[in-house]
Length: 202
Picture 1 (cartoon, rainbow, N blue to C red):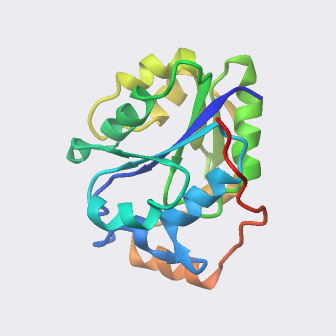
Picture 2 (cartoon, rainbow, N blue to C red):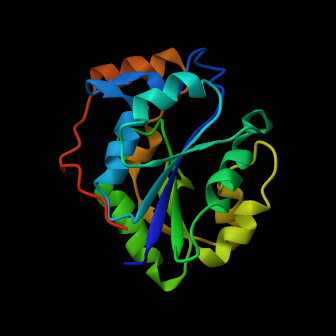
């Protein structure tokens, strides 16, 4: 298993939902807390949360967790700015990074570990769902330059497509939150994180 970081993107304006996605209630907590807890149950060596819009509301919710909270002042540019913010501050000894969204609550720590493990040879490894390859996805350090070159509202999928990434099946990745109907679906079909939050070691 490579030494890897998880970068959770939670800086967007949630314009279609009309309220911060990260604070949508889920499993007696919020989506951002759920995403962080899932990451903490993985074998990641470092976990970053990138905040932008509604940071003043979201930061206190995750401030007690053993994660690094990063501000993205350019969040209005689009998701590329959040990717650059997170990837740009990773430590030199990090061999790769998993890019994760805060609004895919059915993703498990086991899946995150599987992505990183398969990427140990230096490959990009993406989640396969709904006929696409997308995030969560693992990027080796050799791909960091391409991630840092992204601009505007262009996400990591462009880098995934350009490099012919390996795939790990993840039908759970299709469950995300964009509109109120998605929130309703989450409430009707809750899931649990089955692993306990582990202690982090540097």
